[in-house]
Length: 363
Image 1 (cartoon, one colour):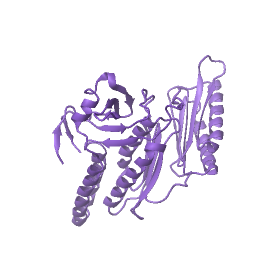
Image 2 (cartoon, rainbow, N blue to C red):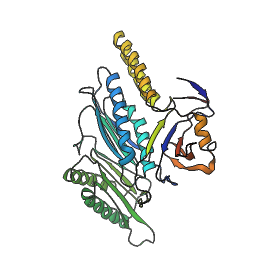
Image 3 (cartoon, rainbow, N blue to C red):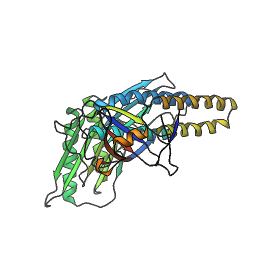
């Protein structure tokens, strides 16, 4: 593997052959709402970590076209079952960026074998067993916003909007949203989004949303609330967080997605967590430490080989040195630029500064 000097250091996500380059990324849908980790620690963490990487690579292929994916790798107790899904109103570009953010954050649960993460625009879960039909669980919760307390008119509108979305979602591919104007006001509304994971049947989806709605309505009179359930997500707010409904020209289409990340991105997050595990294991047995060290090298190699060869100079040229005129917008973890490769392909480049050492790795 060769090294090159680039100023400044960066993380890049490239989306090639987009049917439509979204000019607006809207609200930062890649912002994390909550990370919930399991409570089982494997005897040898290197195996489930490697399985997790393979599972997420498989899911990423599905996310590019449908905004949803499930996959599994390995056998119990070290298997990795994964699920990722974007909420129904997220654009293709926003969905891919949200997915990669979730993928980089969920490994914070290691060495625990399992966890789930809710972002504003997507959800991800990984376990060592098949959980796809689960719709309730011990970690179901509501997170209430505490910015302002609303009057009775807003509370009535919020309840009505929640009921509308929750009623419609089970028969609408698990997704619905609602907007109900607040009585007596000129331009105030209650906004609601309800989304089940696509692995659930309509009846399980309905049961999950009914449970979530009861939980989230307990957040009133606060101006915002989110229900984070095992099988679904519900949010209400007095602020319009809903994305524009995609038209025929901007619906999800087939795209090719390539991720090229500096070592401080997903690789370091996963490997760093794994090294932390090895440090703990060092105090238990020298043998496990030595075995884990070899596995860490293999994992680094696996992660590096999953990337493709794009030089920084190529991307810099394609985006005209990341010129402001080529900026598409900003997501939850960096700025997106449009560019054109020498072969004519349009790309979107995700750039994120992470230190001042001006060094990056060429994969």
